[in-house]
Image (cartoon, rainbow, N blue to C red; front, side):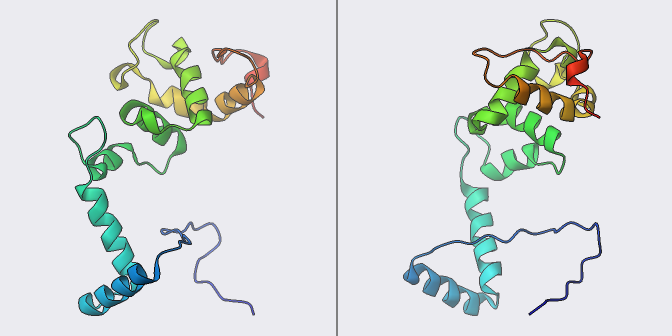
Length: 160
């Protein structure tokens, strides 16, 4: 059976569906909380997760996860990666770390050669405008034993 959506072409979702497995007793507790709070099961789960995020201290920081996520979150992928690298480097995946290590070794992304790798010396606009080419570069050289710095003037790095 086909379903009709209210989204127009080109619109993106503001929420994401996630499938989870939970213990029957926890599900029962969530249902009862929903009745008590006059909320749907989804709203109770979102509320509970939001509370957990706002109360959980981030490792190595006095901030809560909520405060850290506010610093890091962006709908723009390159901005989000840079923010994660600056504020939550321990959570980077291998692929994200490989990208970021390429960035840290590439003087082109920093305000001057050998600049400290801190947000104040990072040129976000140059990073964002080179994002697609940088990803191609990292993918091309992923099997090298060491990181190859990105050269924006190398013809092999130009994406058409």
